[in-house]
Length: 170
Image 1 (cartoon, rainbow, N blue to C red):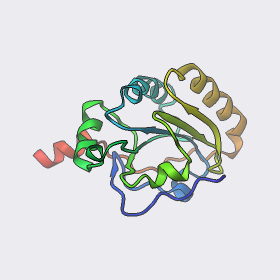
Image 2: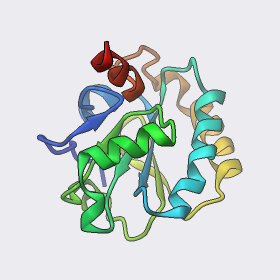
Image 3: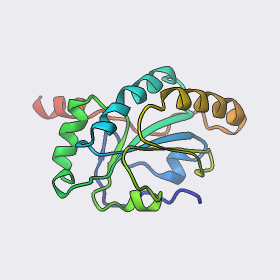
Image 4: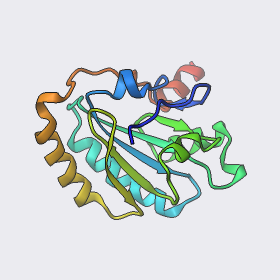
């Protein structure tokens, strides 16, 4: 099952809208499916931060989040943005308020982690928390395995929410 294009007209945080075909093709991509009222989802954030720091400087590995709200009150973009700022999430996050991305990846529980190959096919699917070592090893091995096929140039247009907040204040 190849990853479908992200739906249009969704709010993105920390970046411009990301395209599966043009931005993620040729990359190893880790997608974190989370919701800000899920304590287990929040426990995954330090693992993601560790991995993002470990692979910082390697443009062929992309980390991103998909905020898929469990409850109606979690869907609002402002609340999602507040959570991103509160928990200092730096990677791109799509607000999947209609659960379209969630359903396209056939998710069933929070948190969920999916690693996409350079051809946008899921090659690792994990549920729950506590997978730092597995993800670290898997990304390292996948990086070596796919090295020649990876696009090592930066394509995602990053703009952290905290930077946007500072620009608004100025």
